[in-house]
Image (cartoon, rainbow, N blue to C red; front, side, top):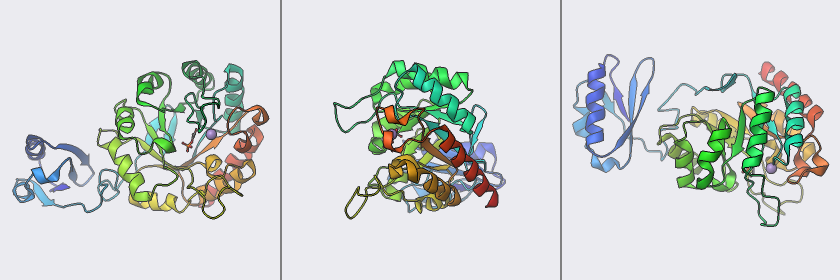
Length: 335
Ligand code: PEP
Ligand code: MN
């Protein structure tokens, strides 16, 4: 990190940036109220820090020990606020993403969207390209599903989000939705992260079920390194220990929420649906996530969960969603 003096001129900042670019590295410039910080992206051995420290306007050159710096609060003290349509993410009010695990048809999508909207949800979800363990399971409606999601989002004035499962889908999906989701299984897919980042839309990045916090942030760093800071981090549970899935599908690591809030400036969400795999646990874990400081929740919702083609046991219905949202709003107010 190159920290510029408070009174550094634009010309001085430009000279430092040009020098770094000349050495074959890239930069990310963070302009705060009091100081400008220039972050280096790439192989740091290619620049001389002593040389840069002597440039006019440079206050100090600070090596960053951590493997992630572009997403760190140290680098960027102000929390990131992401605006999508009328929805403000990370601005203090909790934001609720709701909708089915998978888009199964037009009627199902429209009905679920209507219920989610009247329950108070802000953003509409629905999977069109589903990551499934078995090739014999329902894989999603692909582009047809994206059309239903976009239609429902427009009808109920809700921004939309869906998962991009592979690089080949990035451009197609970006034509239909407002936020691009990287699923837990793809958290480690550098090429996909970079391709999605380049679309210039907000990205919701899910933590892999075996990933540590440092790894999670290292992979978020790939998105920022492409110049996209509109990232929502989402905790969705780790692989259970002991006898495994006896009681819950995953273990929702809610300690990750305040840790991530401290370490980064990015909004942090929790997904109590995949995190527990049980409809009856979605409400208590939603309450806990909001109490732990989450900026929002992703909750799988379905107009008729019994008939769902995917994750039927964890989806809530409209009135359950409304109760969850109402109580979470109260909890946030108390805090
Ligand atoms: C999802 O949100 O649709 C999903 C598949 O979740 P995860 O990637 O966390 O398993
Ligand atoms: Mn699901």
